[in-house]
Image (tube, rainbow, N blue to C red; front, side, top):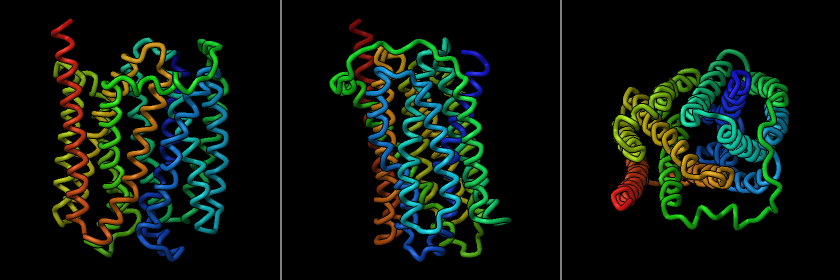
Amino acid sequence: MSRYSLLTILAATFLALAVMYAPQPLLPHFARLFGVSEADAAALITWSLLPMGLAPLGMGLLMQRIAPRRLLASGLLLLGLTEIAFARADAFALLCGLRFVQGALVAALLAATMTYIAGQATRMQHVMAYFVAASIVGGLAGRVFAGFLAAHTTLQAAFLYIGLGVLAAAVMAWRLPAGTAPPRRTIRLARLFSALNEPGFVRLFGVMFALFFVYTALLNFIPFRLRTLDPTLGSGTIGLSYLGLLLGMVASLRAVALARRLGHPLRAVALGSLLLAAGIGIAAVPTVAFVMTSVFAVTAGLFLAHTVLVGDLNALAGTEAASVNSLYVAFYYTGGTLGSYLPGLLYERAGWLAFIALLLTFALGGLVLTSRALHTRMQERMEG
């Protein structure tokens, strides 16, 4: 893969995730501005995650015939336009509608990017690690940038600037090398869902469903928890609480080497699950410092597991990379969609500790699925 291609896909990933998560530290502000509840304000994230469980499946069908580069470039163009529209919107229902469209576009971009990497990169696992790192930094930059500008300028400024950046990335994407054209095969649903017939794939899809459910839930409701613990905290300070995502970037970049040292990729995934569960336990402590610290452990755990699984699944997928990537993104974001809203209802009715107990249950469920997948792989290796 050329340096230009790598820079372009990393920029596209960075900006797509910035779009996704820029509203998150401002959720309390949106709640006050539009007179909605905390759970309803959190729906600005839910609406963007909702289509991400289904849109990748459509992309998987299209990429059976259309080059992922075309989907990447056109998706960036539309995403940039919707972000500028979000900056100008003045009704909460319109904001939610725009977020839904953005979620579908980001899902398409991620599926197309992963498939483009699988078809272009010679050192796929390393490039996938850079891809995950770019997604982490993009999500962090969007949150911190939006929180800072809302505190010092206007609520709309960050969304406008991010939108202009996405349009610039769209221009870059149109110049990407087309790569190998997809085979001119008949589009078939059976081919898309063929990976669901493999228990090994399904378990790993389930792992990321559970872990991203936990991650999204915690990060979505941390702003409200911090405001409960200290009502004087401003949007800029709450935005800084997401600096823990930097450890996720480090984890993603070191994931391949760590998996090699542990002797098997799924051992690194299990370690990631344990780190995430530990972070949830830290968040139970009722102090601002501990809640902020929890973001470091939860993010490191999630992105260690995510980076290793992306590379592992693509290595196993072979010629069906488009289908496997589409299903992976679908499971990943379906977990995030449910995690961004449902635990909030429990939080409102039963409190923070009940919320934490639910997240621990899901984190340990991901660990169990990983252990079963690892056991099966080791048995197959011994028999082989």
